[in-house]
Length: 388
Ligand code: COA
Image (cartoon, rainbow, N blue to C red; front, top):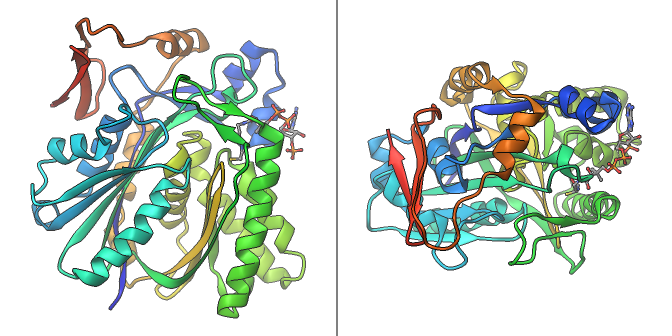
């Protein structure tokens, strides 16, 4: 039985900052952001979007009534969840009107959570082929104003529907993974922004890639030549390239060219959104599938997932017939076109806006947010959402 990704949705907030503007304001050469890191724009979430609403908007785009009835497992991968106890999956389950006979759970391991969710979904579908699993990968990446990590912030969500007979990508059985306890990036429960040892996290991202890629080659007998493209977790779009180029030396020239070209295409959306943590790898996959016309049925796509702390995994899948017809290309392009560029001063104002934490009531103005699903307010420590 084929099991894999049947649908892919993506949502980013409607506001963004131009990285040239941010560089100017911070007294930095813009080339550091646009060339050195490979980021052109950074999504900015208004206070009316949190990881729950971002995920619900991404999923709403792809699910029809039949999907909603067949989903009996919702897995929410996030590292910026809104509650230490209740899972964000339960909120989204309600907002989307899913079948109540479902399991809903949140999963955490930095940017790796959604990949763990996908692997669990595969097992679930193997046991229950008539069911579907909804994976949500949603995060707001916050390092703080004027910090070295600021230029790698972002916000957005990817929704992934896993099923039997998938229409986009059949996920293959083989995958290799690796865990090691390291402190490259973390966010203690009392902190709203992350701590990061940036250079060390870059090194470890590459070291974990080399380990899982070596294991994958040994396990499968495959080499780079077998791949049409490899998509990477992208904290910023230069990162995956730094890892890929370390294993390319022995590959034939045309393979190197193909992988390099497809890598660039896979970074197109991420360049304009920034880091979305758990969803970054899958946003890159969407970018590749929606922007590369040369891909065809049977092509093998590699995926490198990395979650600081750290867990790395290399997995792969094969493209299905007519996969292009089941993508949301037009909707995603329209979403990008309709976004609003804000100044650095406006971004700083939005960044500093906070919800009350003392139980008092705050109603939010959702009229300025074009999203279908918004955070509408908080009262007695309870968040309320609106579906327009
Ligand atoms: N034009 C072009 N490139 C420039 C430049 C300019 N004017 N100025 C600097 N650069 C390049 C640097 O050479 C460097 O390239 P390299 O990495 O290929 O050597 C790159 O821009 C970044 O510069 P650097 O000085 O290393 O940036 P930094 O000290 O601000 O740190 C991060 C960058 C990514 C480490 C930092 O943003 C961070 O901590 N981010 C969060 C953590 C993260 O994303 N980790 C990734 C693994 S999950």
